[in-house]
Image 1 (cartoon, rainbow over the protein chains, first blue to last red):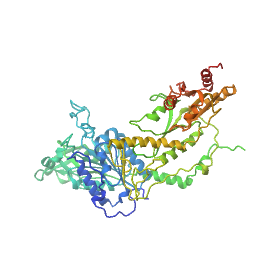
Image 2: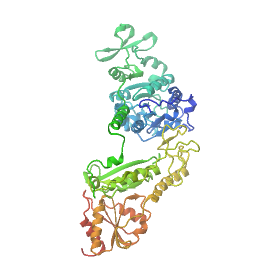
Image 3: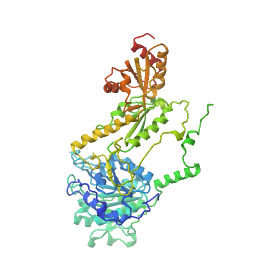
Image 4: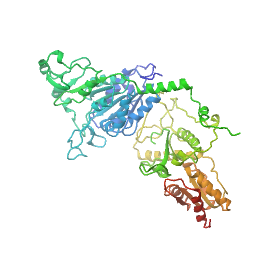
Length: 342
Length: 286
């Protein structure tokens, strides 16, 4: 048993097909979830983990039907509580590789509290949050990531709730790996999934996902070819934060403690903001940036090392056993305030 | 419920609703334990009778949850939780075994294939090669465990989940009766009122009354011999620290004209007041 990471067993040579279950996929035609499912099934063989050691745990919502379509172990649990159940499984069975699949409603509304705690504890599991900015399964009510003023069935004159930013939330909770990817960019999804899955601790990935029925093109700013060229900021560790079309490259720089967009050619190379995944404070600044005033960061915002929850738990357990010996129910029952009647 | 996995819930009841009167005792969560879920979702419900009995009830809860693959709710209460009594420490080697058999055999495996005696489905630990499967809250087709909206399957599964819990009755030992096996009055109790009821009944017996008592540790399913026992007495009295919950169950289940003795003050029942209730019901002066 290896406390952090998958078992030492060697995995057979798998193909994508080995991870497809025999269940009919019941998402709406055209849903972004199909692309994510395909990307995850395609990524699985590359992880080199025997499929019996892989578990997908979800809450409730469209995204949460995910486990039924993976030919691994899976548990479609209760609304918002996937992180709690996944934490329990991880502590009990640290040799398993656990994925939590959730959405903006499941993970940030009813499950917001659980999300907070799994992130701060840094449990070794991978969280995939499909963000479509709407409750799709219940047919189109505003979600915690819906924009202010959003008109939906449950907000007929516009939402009065300010939206939450999943990346900023995760970083605020002390997440040790935070990334963003897009359902329409399969190679990038693939790369982010692999990195998150290999991270030691909680790997949090926000996947911008299209709900073509109830919130179509909510992320058009990064789908539309021209807009994407203007706004997408690919984060690469050690590279300057540059974006925009080749003939109009722009750069992010820091003015005091405030990010600012400038023309790349107007600033010396030494003034450029170089992306550093180890810098959590920089990641927090990046997390808040979005179009139209700023670029949209995609990629790994941060990836840092921190103690892993179940490692600490198991250490405590081992220490207790080595100091006091293995558990003995008879000894326990006769300890403390006991006496004999003759 | 739908996952059909073992789970033990310990509810140490206190005066409610909501925060109510913290640390004060009550027995008002019986209906919640029996019925307080969406749809029809019966679970095993147990209740310890004394502080020392809490050990055996917890042990029994784990054993039944694992054997029948079903949640168990243990209803303790503030009086039991804060109470104490001399307790004979059991010989750990003589406790009944809790047998847990994780399925590893691939041949003929289905996630909802049932044990013919208990109707329990197989318990598979993630990490077992070749038995990868999915469970979850959506209704499952029996045997295969595939998602199913088939009306007949749902009807079958509702009945199967209920039958599984009903079969736990085969685990319940014969009900022990404190007093004559037939007579004028039977006092039926559950939970932390055991001491007060027993004292009141013995007091009445000493006074020559034809009174007996039984104390239920299994509240769902009820002991299989209970219906027969209830009919052996002219009257049935059910003292509870609620406004009448077990009494309703007994009336509904056995069509007996049981009456309640109910005080909901956040305090344990006193043997004296139960004794008075016995005398009143028997129409005799104390």
